[in-house]
Structures are given as structure tokens and as C-alpha cells.
Amino acid sequence: MKLLIIPTLNERKNITLLFNKIKKIDQKLNILFVDDNSTDGTREEILYLKKKNKTISYIFRPKKLGIGSAHKDGLKFAYKKKYKTILTMDADGTHNPKYIKTFLKYSSRFDLISTNRFEQKNSLVEWPVGRRFLTKVRYYLINILLNINYDSSGAYRCYNTKNIKLNDILGAKNNGYSFFWESLYLLDKKKYSIKEIPIYLPYRKVGSSKMTTRDIIGSLLYLLKYSVKNLIH
Image 1 (cartoon, rainbow, N blue to C red):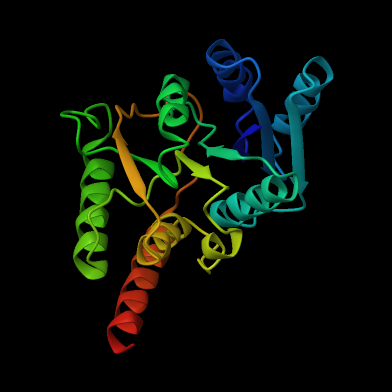
Image 2 (tube, one colour):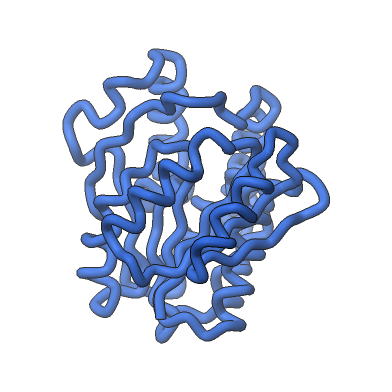
């Protein structure tokens, strides 16, 4: 049993297109949408898709609770339903479903498969210069401060639930964007096997990024506090 978790927040124009692309790759893949009270018709679009597709489930949350929190709720749902393989991806169209085949290829051989935006030349060439700079700064800061060698802040992943304990993922306390590097760091510390696959990551074509300046500053402060705490211990 395989489940793909897709958090959403005002992504009405993206999700049907994304859903159709996913189904061309894997017809049997179940999909869980975790929506944070979208106001643009995303929920209505999810309900419309569900009427025609039994593979769709959803969690509608009362307000914006954070991208990390959405992943946690999705993972709890998946473990409760005893899915053997869990994939996670963004709803904004930047994560190409073609990589699902690669994830599944390695899903029984590794505990976690994640993506790397820096192994492939010009992977971020479509991105604005400012976003590219911030992404690279975050990448190097995380690797230096936490002494890891992964592109750990991406949400496009695959978990092997036969081996990974849910509580080891939920050990990541952050409910925002820092959930991704924190959870990967903890899984690495617990010696789970982790594989990265290189990807090309286009910039979103429709809609706007949900990451705000406040999110960026908050993530940086959380990283600094986290790294200092780990040094002390």
C-alpha cells in the first residue's frame, strides 16, 4: 500500500493538473490532501476530485497550522492506516511526479529517500536570484551547523514505514518549514539509511509562494537555537 501526502493552501489552480500527472505515473497510488483552510476553492476542488476518484482522501484543518504540522498529520494518518510506503510532495507544481518512479524503485532498499537540488547542474536556474541565494545559504548553514551532508529542507520524500518509527519522525518539534531539516537530521542521527536523488526544481508557474519573510527569519533563528542546543548537549 502506497500513499502520497500533499499539503495544500490556496492551490486550486494547481491540484487538478498535478493529480492528473500523478495518475499517469501510478494509477494505484492513493493520495491524501491536507488542507489548511484554503479560501480560493481548493477544498471544493479536492471534493470534486474525490467524487470521481476513490484513491483520494483528505484532512481539512480549521486554519493555517504550518507546513510541518500538515506533514505530521498526514504521516499520522498514513501510519494509522498501515501504509507501507509514504511519499510527500508540494502542491505548487515544482515537484515533478516523474520522480515517483525513482522513489518507489529505492523504497524497499532505503528507509528514507529524499531529493537533492544541488547535485544536478542548474537545477534552480528558473528561480529568482534572491530565492536561489537564500536557498543555498540555508543549505550550507544547515550542513555546517548540524554536520550533515544532505539537502535536508526539501519536502519531496519517501518513507519506508516497515523500518522508520513514526515517533522518530515526530521527534521534530517544529511545525513550520524547519520540520524538514529537523526530521531528516534526527533520522540520520538514529542511523536510518537515507538516499538522495538529484532533481530539477522549476520555479512555480501558478500562484504565489507561501513562504514569508517572517518564515525565513523564524527558520534561521530556530536553526541557530537548535544547533547551539545540540552543541551544549
